[in-house]
Each structure stands twice: as structure tokens, then as C-alpha cells.
Length: 231
Image 1: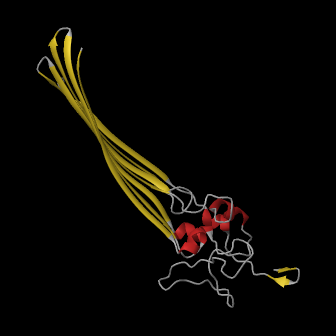
Image 2: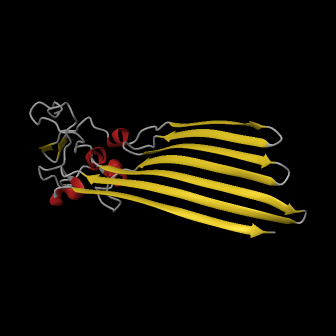
Image 3: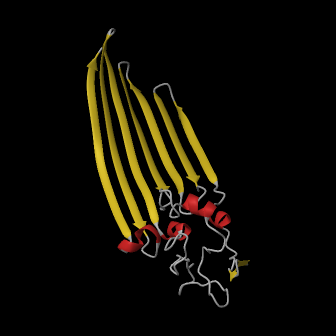
């Protein structure tokens, strides 16, 4: 197109269409229970996968729970309840500030004369890396809008992910000593494991001037609670 006597090449890249997607959400649950007068059991398994509406975003979870209660003789009842869950959460790694490094702002306000991908200025053909990967236009030619920034390129070449594994255990023991006197013991033991991965590409965007950013964090902690009661 020609604007005020200067030619501009309008690229075929549509920032809205490229950035946003229709994520699929899947959830499955299976459970079983049964037993006898003295023994009761329960087992459940569930799986959730939510893709999200941006690339490199989504949430998934798998959880398992098992429970057994047992009556022993006339005076004793005991049980255990164990649950495990694994969750993975991927978040878009772009700026949350009010500028063109913000994927939501840039996708809706970037002029169409500024492409997402890198093109040959002579032929107009799209360029690819040595392994066929996408190459992004970071505005390194001194464009007046969003210079050295491509929020979509940063989104696809960066990482922000949380992974957690949690195990919770509950157990109890009840003993009827007399008709109006019962001894109860309860125990709870939990284990929490977490892992956080963060990487921002050095190719352009927020971390260009510091040659990229990276962080990895892992944590693990446990909790134990026990009590004994006479009621």
C-alpha cells in the first residue's frame, strides 16, 4: 500500500488469528466402591486436560484416591485414605505491563504492516531456520512501533511452567473401651513437591538487553499431624 507517497508492504500475518486458538478441555472420571458389612473400599481416578486459548498455556491434572475402612471384632474400627495428584500449569511468558511486549495489547493493536514472522524483503518469501523452525520479526530494523519486540515470538520461544506432586494420607483407629468411652487416634501425613521453570528468550523482547533470563526452583515439604482422644 502507499501512504503519503511511501510504499508499505502489508504482510499476510493476522496477529489475532495467530495468537488466539480454540483450546480443548477434556475431563474423565472413573470410580468404584464396594465391600461387606465389615470392610468398605473406594477408588477413584480422574484426568483433566485444559489447553487454554494461547500457545504454551494450559493446565493438566491427574488424581487418584483410595479409601478403606475396616471393622475388627466388636470394638475396633480403622481406616486409611490416600490421595495423589499431579498438576502441570503452563503460563504465557510475556510482559504483563501496558506496552507492546504484552501479548494481549500487541495482538489487538499491532499495525498489519509489521509482520509476526521474518520475510525476505526482496522476494516476500517467509524465512525459516536451519531446522525448519519459525523465525520471527523482532523489529530490529528500527521500526517506530514495538522496536526489538515480538510478543508472539516471545510467547513461543519462552517458558513458564509449574509442576506439582502432592500426596495426602489420613488414617484413624477407633476403640470402644466401654459403652460410653471411646479411644480415637488420628494421623495425617502430607508430602508436597513443586518445580518451577522459567525462561525468557534472548532473541528479542523483554530479555534482549540481558541476553535472556532463566530460573529453576524446586521445593519439597511435609506435614505431620497426629492426635489421640478419649471421648
